[in-house]
Image 1 (tube, rainbow, N blue to C red):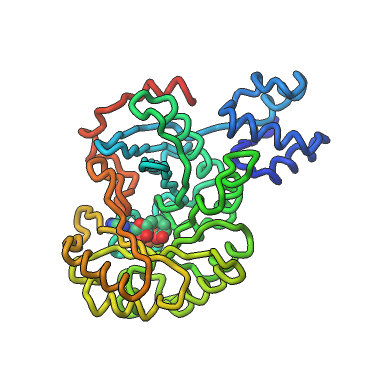
Image 2: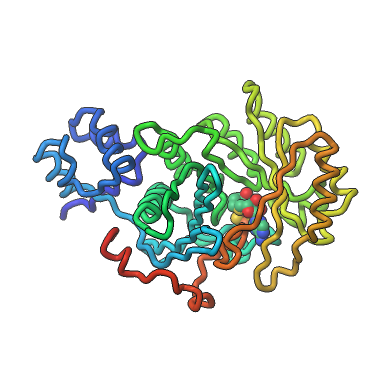
Length: 369
Ligand code: SAH
Ligand code: SF4
């Protein structure tokens, strides 16, 4: 019986180099293949004209470049685009593209569901199913780029930034996350700078340290509360890794590089964490740290039990934190009408079918299967 073909989307540069050298091929094959896959968007070995004919047919026999199936695409009024990708086992993940004036941010998933059960998050509510493979992570970037460029409704849309802020806790899928990040930043693949690739974590301290040691990228920390009592309630992993330990890991991350910053995410929950006393407590916590605060309006979902903070509460909170000397940004909510906003990603399509009106499947079916 012959071996199952190897999915080449599962390898970063070093993985591909090993794949080729195990077969007696020169290491530069890895670079050639990466350029075809990620820069020329070519998955058909037959078209890889700088490889010998025998090499191409050997690849066709032993390797493949398989992508998830594009199940749905939704385009919001504000230009935000959300895709549902169906994995080989039938699981569905979500990926969101958010266009802004000078950049286009892709929000990428790292797991099917999430085990960490933050009280305000739809993905957490769904529970954990499994980790995504390297290919399932990087395929989100590949497919988004190709679907955007092939779509007349999204002219000039281009992925310039990637945030690991989709479904799942990226640091709990460490061994697949790192090669995927490497492909995002490798000049032979997507070549994005480390400032444009951000891992967001709820604070898995040992994995934060491993990340710091393994790869240089940007870091966002989902803080959401200025003290342990409240954070224990909102972000349950805080009981294992309390704020002090998380802050120490943040210090180790910024150490040694003057320009390094951490982005602290803080979802604004009405009457829960948006009070002036909490803003002052946040200032005391972050005052001496090289970071910024990103206030995120809470995005409601059925039975969440929370409400979004009022504009007045957000404005008051922003002023107190800014006056405390901390740079504070408020994230605008995007893609509300297609449930593409932060924390609404649940990969559940059953009750949303009426909204899938924009595109039909055949457009993808032929293109990418
Ligand atoms: N698991 C990682 C990354 C995915 S969540 C993390 O928690 O950081 C990405 C961001 O969306 C996190 O800051 C998360 O706290 C936030 N988020 C989750 N649910 C939300 C909701 N309902 N409204 C607004 N932001 C939410
Ligand atoms: Fe998981 Fe992040 Fe949602 Fe928390 S906020 S449940 S860590 S995806």
